[in-house]
Amino acid sequence: MVSVIVCHCKGVSSRRIEAEVAMGASSVAEVGERCGAGTGCGGCVPLIETILRGRPTVTEQACEVLREEAAELISVD
Image 1 (tube, rainbow, N blue to C red):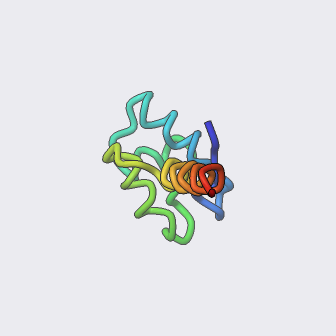
Image 2: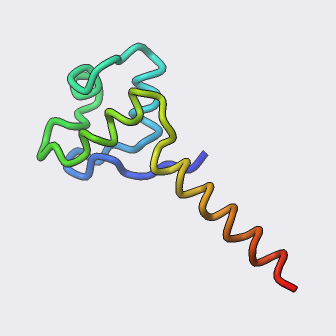
C-alpha cells in the first residue's frame, strides 16, 4: 500500500491516519489526539474527514489514475 504525507505540519502519513481510524478514532479531534494530524494549520482536515468517511483517499485515487495511465500505455497500437 502506498502512503503519502497528509499532515505536513506534524509529518503524519495517510497510512498512520487510516490505522488510527481502524483502531477506533471517529473524528478529526480523535485522530489529532492520537497522532497529531490536523492540529497544526488545519490544511489537512478535509483529507482526514475523507479518510474518516471511508471514501477513497488521495493515495487510492492517485493509484487508480496511475493504473489507468499504465493500461493506456500498454494498449497503444
